[in-house]
Length: 130
Image 1 (cartoon, rainbow, N blue to C red):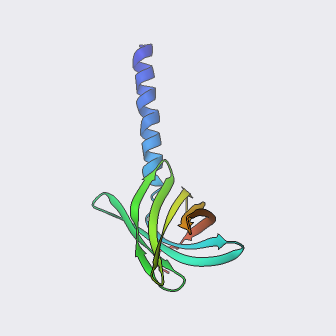
Image 2 (image 1 turned 90 degrees about the vertical axis):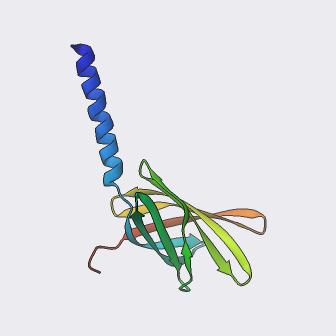
Image 3 (image 1 turned 45 degrees about the horizontal axis):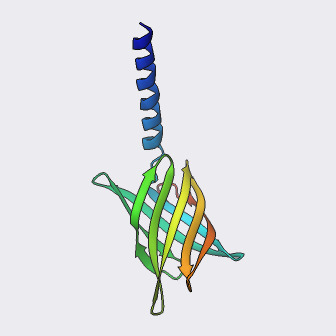
């Protein structure tokens, strides 16, 4: 009897953990801000689930759009990469953020001149209908 009760409790807890992960869906449009050496840079992150796979784009302040790569979401943590083109240079920016409700917060990192630089990154999900 104890074994059956323990098994039932284990399945219930696993189910709750799975439900919490799927409930924290990062899909939507996010207004974001990156703090680069005290300067705030705005961007728009758009995420959607397409055929069970998370995809998206990042539009930077200068209206340049980048398709996201390596998009993953697990345990409330979202990670992805976006390529930023500045003149003839392409810079890959890697993002790793925690999603909590309608906010996300974490870091963005890019290799510039052989040196990896890390920046604070946060965003708020736009409400539908805006």
